[in-house]
Length: 426
Ligand SMILES: *Cc1c(COP(=O)(O)O)cnc(C)c1O
Image (tube, rainbow, N blue to C red; front, side, top):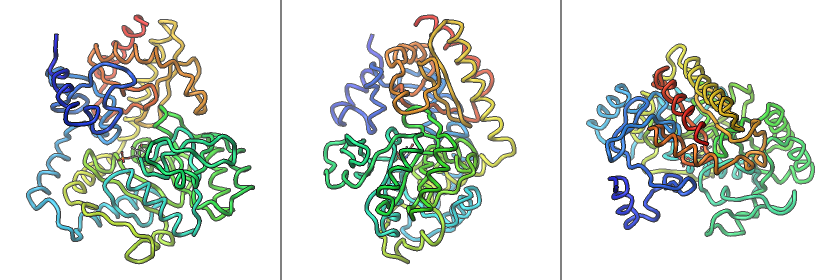
């Protein structure tokens, strides 16, 4: 039986490499045919066969208020009639900047861009420009978009600089990136002792969501803050995923740590392309047109995308929004864990705010190495059993999951019922 998804996937592969515009959508790690989505509403989306799924990706985070929220849709419609793009400043951009500065403790000035990749790449350039240093530190398993300097994995020894993870990234770029272990504060201290005065910045996901969910230990982030200050390196929190997702003030409000720069994306566009980076004016003043660090964008601060962002940021400030989002997410992971235990499956789960991780491992992984030991074959079977039961999880064992404010008790209970049946099949 050929479904419309199969037909569309075959057609897509002729005009687009792999049939998709972003690799994880292609289902390569889980196998099978990706679903082509026709519409979405609240916690659901529908595929090309008009089958309805409970969605736990939420566009990889942005759909925090649920899909097609009437307030967001209306804001976009109203903005669109006034004109799509001007290439000149608008008041909406000021409102957006003011709101971000008000909500994220460490940001006093912010620049808007169109993708998380662009925001992280620009933050890196700013850190290098402001410090006059070239070398950067990132951590294995953290994703910061696909800028050349960041598509790098660890070299063979502690102080050997990294190797490109993508063809097309010159060794000359990768050699400035040092890749260390996530949640290993001692290694960070040792590294700074050796070459701290050459490091422009440390970039980290404070709650990592791109190697499944892996929260940093407080000690790891506190140590990072301390050594960056001591050696004059810029501390960059990449909160593209965790920002407005784990808490209203992002991961930095949970850990009570002020980074020098914060990178935002995903939620702040409410489903349209908005991202940002910001921090203290002393650093931000280095950006053009004031300073010597160049950065620009034809569609940066676009009036329609900013309208979607503003409407979303307004909704998430409702009293109790994060208490309820966190409670629903906790219910979900508790339900998964209990269902797995009943079926005697080695499984664990974790959540922070509206973000969760499920692990086919008896204990929650605490490092990248432990994460990589999770049973991917079991995950893939589970993923397809859930998909067959109309629940759409991220199509990879190493991606986090996302709950929206529209995931009601009924939706969560239906998911747990599906998981109970899925575990029984494993
Ligand atoms: C998604 C993501 C990015 C990249 O954002 P894009 O908008 O996809 O370019 C960067 N950093 C983190 C932590 C992300 O989750």
